[in-house]
Amino acid sequence: MKNIAIIILLGSMMSCSDQIRVRSDYDNDVDLTKFKTFNWLPAKEIESKNNPLLLNELTFKRLRKAIDQQLALKQVQFSDSNPALLVHYHIIVDNRTAIRPAVYGYNYGAYWMRNQVDAYQYREGTLIIDLMDASNKNLLWRGWGTSVIDGPIDLTEEQINDAVTKILKAFPPSKK
Image (cartoon, rainbow, N blue to C red; front, side, top):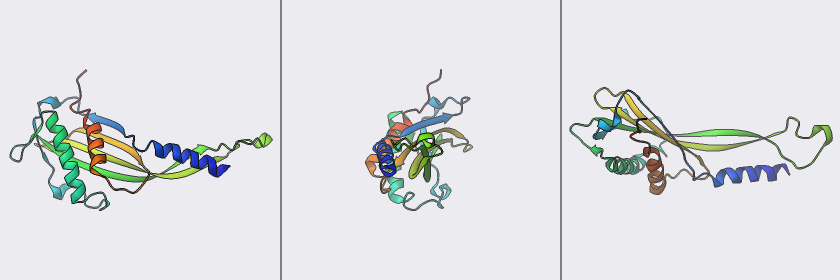
């Protein structure tokens, strides 16, 4: 019975794995709508110590294309010569452990559910997109999306496009 509860719990988590939780943060003192050009942070400044399965030329190309398209839709154009913003990204995959009260379905008198928990492990992936002031490299806006990874880490073009679209939906932030 314990194994069935774990399978049901894992199955419900994995069925939600295509859902990405998105957040963003930004410098309230800066009007981000005034920035109309961008370029990429030089490759030598991108972390090389990360997983080569995630950070490679193919992933960079897919991310760059998706971010270029989304920023263009927001009237922020790529510029080699005089960018106002620098774009940078991070990809993180963490091993996580979740602990939930065990549900066995049997009543063992006074021992029902006493200190009984199920623990299971899963992987969580996070894509972070940073937009920095090109003049001083100060972080102006950060958006990130997190999702449970329930299979191989392949980062397809479709997955990248979906994540980038959802993350950059919050840029530029609306002033309240």
